[in-house]
Image (cartoon, rainbow, N blue to C red; front, side, top):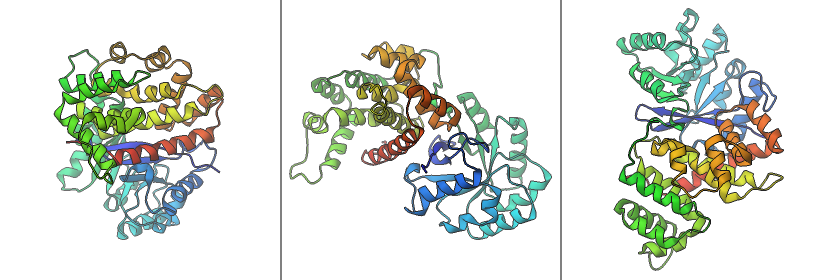
Length: 410
């Protein structure tokens, strides 16, 4: 049996990623794979926490795990260290005496607990003293009702943390922020926050110029060197990064040309992807950069698994540029005009067409744990669902390892 999961980032009020909810299924009726809630949770825990003691797929951040009623009554979380994850009490749990006993015991043991998709009702009131986080689904609970609940508890000096789920647009993030939410979950950062055309900042222009160069089939290292040399911070990051990778050398690398030649085309593309992008727009959530990198690797690796093998570099660029409109705050159509991308990549990015578009739709569906869409796309691309799952997990781990080798943001 394979382990299938996706993850959704959880951000704080500064848009910093503090953790990820790990998603094994798409609601009670699973379509990918077809197993029950209890088995899904147990499989996720076994594959990601039991053997290693830490979870690679959360990049070292907090994990939010859904627990059904029976798992809580059986005290399954007690099998794991209390810092392993945050326990989410599913909304399908019955708020009976047995559940209250289990929740209070977990609370006393030092575990962090959250009420998932919370709806204020009298029968849940007695659970609130034992939980730390309350999650409101903005699609199910009116924001005004959630805001009233939050305000009432904060006025009483409550230390509860409130999390807004399914925040899909920047306007929704702003409204939830003003309503008093502390944490946010959703994909509002995965689309442009500003859709009107505006002038790019100098740092963003530098990034776009670098993107243009790495989009070519053969990278012109001299041109890349000239671009990087005009930016002091970027220059420092490049040399710092390469010397970290080559610390065993007797003589450090001191020139941009040496650094670029050492990296080579593939590693240079990765460097530009993460460091230059984060340098260009520093007020964006860190998850955005990681997701770009992970999607690029996912599309690249999966392109070689298809019956009609695709150009792996084109697949990498498709995943890499899938969030470019959000990163540079420009419509994707305007940005595509400034990049020498092949037609299949353009069609994939603008209209999600072609085999590359199918790969990108598959990556997005997996990000959102849309198992029905995944099943449909796997049939269309004639690829096994198990292969997609393994590739997704491998891309998460690869992106995590790569991210750890890079210098931090300034």
